[in-house]
Structure formats: C-alpha cells, structure tokens
Length: 567
Image 1: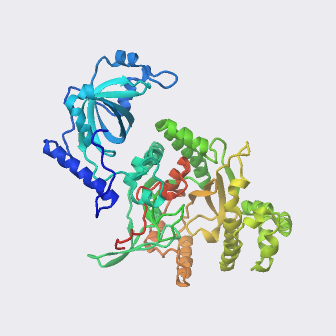
Image 2: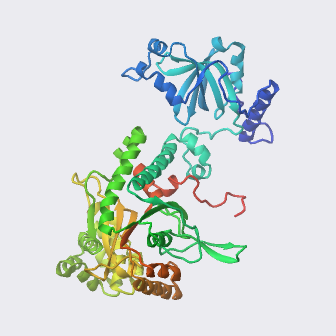
Image 3: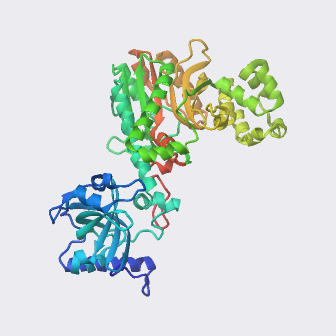
C-alpha cells in the first residue's frame, strides 16, 4: 500500500516505538495539508447519505446469490448510482497496483472499500497515511468486486481519528488472557466473538427487565453502602465515610432493603445492581458482580421454580431474536438444554443418589436402609480412616475431593450442616452426570430444593418438615445460577436466627450476618407471605454464551497492577 509504515526500528527505539513514531509523522502530514487527524466534522461531502454498514448491506441484499457472491449488475439496478457515506475502523488493508482494499468495521458489521487510483486520482497517494486501526470515513457507490464481494467504491476517503498505537502483532486472534482482560479495548476489536458476548449481555439484561416489568414488578435502587453486613453469608469490603466518620460495608446483597419495601406495600419489586464480596477469585467468582433480586408477595418457592423456567426460556428466546447467528452457535455448543422440564430434587435425595453412584458398598446399604439420613448417621463424626478404602470403589469415588470434604465435615456442628457439606462435595460436582436430558447427551438444569434450616438464615421453615426450609438453588450443568426461597416473615424467628449468626461471628466465622434491629422492626410491622429470588447476571451471560470464565463477561475485571504500577 502506498507509504506503508516502516518495520525497522531506529537505534535507541523499540520496534513498537518506531511504529508509533511513524504514525505520529503521518498525523503531522495530515495537519500540514490542513486535515485534522482527530476530526469531529463527520458528514457527507459528496451528496451521500450516511448509513450504518448493516444498512448499506441491506440495500444490496437481493443481489446476493446462493453461493454468497454478489452480482455487480443487480447491485447497480438496486442502488441506481446512489452515494453512501460510511465510517468505521480499518481492520485490514492491502494494495495491488492501482487498487487498495480496506476492510471497514462499525458497530453493525463490516464492508470492503475498493479504492482505485483511477477514481481518486492524485488523492490516491494519501492512502499511505492510513494504517490498521485508524477510524476513517468514505463516500462512494456500491459495487461487487471480481470475487463477488460487496464493496464500496469511494469517491472520497478521509482519516477521522489517527490511531497512534499499532494493534497487536496478532490483530486477528489476540489470545493472551492477561492482555485481553487488561486491554479490553483491544480485545473487542481483535476478537469479534468477544464483542458478541458483551452485546449478548446487554440484550440479556434488557430481556430480564422486560419480563419482570410485564409481570408487574417495579424496578428500584437500594443503597450500595451499608452500616451492617446482611442479605447473604459472605465477607464484605470495608469503606469509610469521612463526613459522617462512619465505617461502612459495600453491599453483598440488596435483600434486606428490598424486603423492607415489600413491608411498605411494593408487593412485586426487583433490582439489578452491583454487589461486592471480599472473597476469592475463580472462573465463577469476581469481587464485584451484577445481581438480580426480586421479591414477590403471596408467592411461594414453588411458584418461583415455575417462573424461573419461564424466565430463562424467555430470555434465551429474546437473545435468539436479537442475535440469531451468534445464538445458533452458542446453542449448538451448550452442554445443557432448556428444551425439557428442569429436574427438581430435594437436597436429601440428591445426596442419597450421589452416595449410591459412588459405588461405595456400605454407603449404598446405608442409603437403602434409611435414605440420606441413614447415610449421614453411617458416616458419623469422622470418616478419615476409611477414605483410602472408599476412594478405590469407582472412578467417581476417586474423583471426590476427599481432603476438603473431610475438613468441611469436621467443622459441622449438626446434621443439617453435614447434609449440606455432603451435597457440596458429593452431589453438586456430579449434577451433570446424574441428571441427563432424554437423549442422554446434554444435562438438565436441576432445582436442588429443601435445604437444611441451619444453612439458610433468611429462609422460611417448611410447614411440614421444620428441620428444612422452603428453598431452592438452580444449577445449570453444575454451575449455581439462582438462589430462592419462601421468605421468613416471623420477626421472632428471624431475630433468633440473627442471634445465631452473631454467635458464629463471635466465635470467629467470617461469612456471617450482623443482627439487623431495624429489619426486625420492619417485620414487626407485618410482611405478607412472599418469595424471593437472586441470580447473578454475569453467570447467566456465561451460561447462555458458553463463556468459560466470569472474567469473559465482565468488561473490566479486577486485576493485579501491571509491573511498575502502584497498588
């Protein structure tokens, strides 16, 4: 291409700095001839109409043949010499003889610019001032290249923004994870599939709001800085309000404020907002994340299970409508399916099934005799001496995280906590194996229901089995997505559970709640029977787009400072 940037670095310069210097020189060349390399007067200058690239392509849609090629004659008939004004970023360029080919991308798509010296005349040499990554405008007519590619033949090309820094060497397919997360602005340009994920996230949030709004819910905003820790069992971030000289906690959940609103008469209420938990980072955990919580008066956790199936299918359908091509790829790659009713299983039954599937003979006998309760009694207070023997029973038994299972078991104070520990290490990791769709290939989403009372300090006790609470969590291919329960509206019961949380905190437990006196007072004014629901929007996006890590669906995830930066 005319005037392409040099590839040799000068003494004392890095190769990258040499390229930056060359681009700066081109910017000065633009200024010298009266053009602003950082312009703001974006408008047609040859009588063209300004269109997004997708709209330009739509103009020629009927000129496309079955093999994907465009017919030049049909294009000419369709547009009849109409001039189009477009703008976007240059993502590819090459030159041969008196022709240059520039690939342009905007928010709606891509198109080729077929730039000829014959059409531009002496201005053709100015293409040498255009580099990969520059943002340009062009005006011209539509045509088809010799290879049948839809193209714009420009009468005019101009740099709008000069990119002073060159793109990564591997512009198409930036793969270094650290660079991708740290320089998301490069990642979005280099990896179109990444851009698709974040477009999908926006549509997912929009579809969620649409569904709740149409179901009569009111969206609200509640405080993100709290004076007490509440709403979930998690370690909070601390901050300080200087003017009030107050220690504050960044919220770990909006739950207790939203339920205050139910007391106040907002019978269907929801919030989609940022929450913060001072915990470890993993593929499913980030210190700040986006949570949906809604509360529904006069509903039970059974109503919420029905609604959740409707909600997830509805959101997925809206995503398919908004992004049909990308959605088709995501759906084909999913290891789970929404096309069948979700599985519903009590935690006790999930543990009993998981125990049997390990093929540990005495476990199977204990479950057969008395179900999950019998199995808990069989394990007793400690089972360390049997681990070596039991782990040889089957490949499944070998895959159990025995060390952490035993450590968690020894910390348990009662059978409720032991049941939860058993589920966490024996059941949850194997849900995709234990609950399959009818074809036996994909997994079913699983509602795990009826949690132990001791592990659910805000949920309502079961009227039938008071040692349990009316709670479920939804797992999609082994990943927790939703947590919901019939709400506890008995102020005396809630006060006692807060006191138990305070006792655990005094004993050194970090992931506990404070005693919230004002919330108890709110309940004393009377909260109608209700059910509440929480879902991570990041995890929902991960699930629907097959993203392997939560950092892949958060635009700017928290990272350690780069070398040389101050923490």
